[in-house]
Image 1: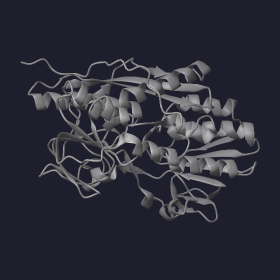
Image 2 (image 1 turned 90 degrees about the vertical axis):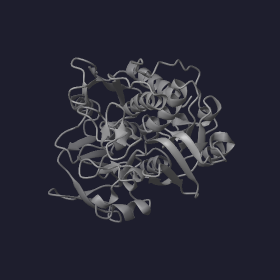
Image 3 (image 1 turned 30 degrees about the horizontal axis):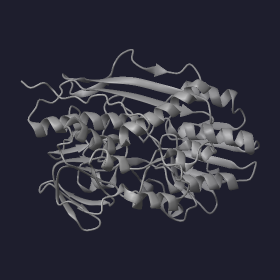
Image 4 (image 1 turned 90 degrees about the horizontal axis):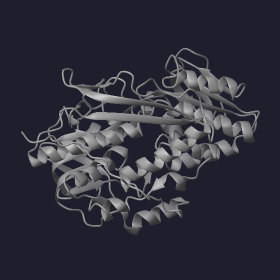
Length: 438
């Protein structure tokens, strides 16, 4: 028997984002400056759709674990990687977009990955091809699909039109909407109300909405002290780090933050600034940040990979992350039907990418797949621009149950927010961006 292949640790120091990334124009310039390939190959051993925490990591680690012998094509429509983790600090004024933006150039330059700037418009799992929006078709031996989530605008009446008009934003994928929502908050009068709605779990980044509410409350406390943050949660209670967030709201943001559980949004009236709920009274606010239910990314749905949880999420074999709907297709990150206690987080998607990469290299090389992969997760949440709380966990593959389960006694949560954890959080971000992209 051959020795199972597992991903190895790689030391990646000195990763720096370009400091000139201050605007959309600069991002475009960066993309044109060498991040995307101009030639689209007709075939590759491994094709990866999506350059986020899952896809970019998988692409890089297939190359690393095969000693750069397996050719990889990464399909990503964006000019640059913009991190969702840390992006809430852009809303509070603690960070700029440049601080969370990174180039894809190192994937090409350092690892020989062909980065194609385009959308994947169709997957033919029988013919094993990916068709791009630009018209090209790429054949594959192995396909990695890591498209993130699709926001289900139709689950809330009026939301699609309100988003299209720019009146009601989500900013749940960091980018232009992040800046637009920041402008709405800056324009809001002192004494105004910012309302964020949270969909029923599962959704991308369980603590993310509560972090967002907290750091915006910190901005209001400093700049608009008569203003208020309303958290309108479809879940019965805070889904992640609940006691810690509630303690912060009670002690640090008393009179600013109000939390209401079991408030499921059903409709929005953007012109009137009103959110309607299933059983509760309507809520009026100056800035509406309405997060709808989520599902697997569009390309995964179009390919029929969404075969779990009423066709919202993609089922996978957790040992390899191969789809249970299509052979030689591996699905990662937020699009999958998660294992018990497994969050939809950037850190977890990064780990998915490594385990899948090791399995793909083993399968293409005729080696045994690692029978006992391990995953870790760390999620830092800012409660203002400096202080942070965290949750961490370790997940082991349980052979008898064919799934991942949290290791008893592993990880845990903070005792309370500290500035030191804020330092750790920013270091975590720099390290994982390097691990994913450098």
